[in-house]
Length: 112
Image (cartoon, rainbow, N blue to C red; front, side, top):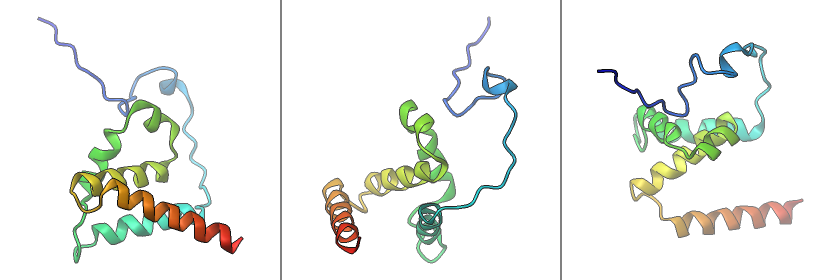
């Protein structure tokens, strides 16, 4: 009896057209956004806090909706996954996140 293995959207090994595309091995300059997300996730995962763990972050990234997974950049996926984990663990509420984001946007608009 043959079994059908369901592929997760991140499991692209041997799937065309990805399988025949060359891998871009050039170094990419990190943006300030990339550095900020990396620092934020690093702080949340630090052993003194353990708010999130690397395996949780990976699971959250791999659980993104296909449109998010394929449409977001590397660090945007990290940020969305961290957001989802904070909500999942009841560390932050959705309203609290939205209010804080609005305050940050307002402060950025005033400073520009």
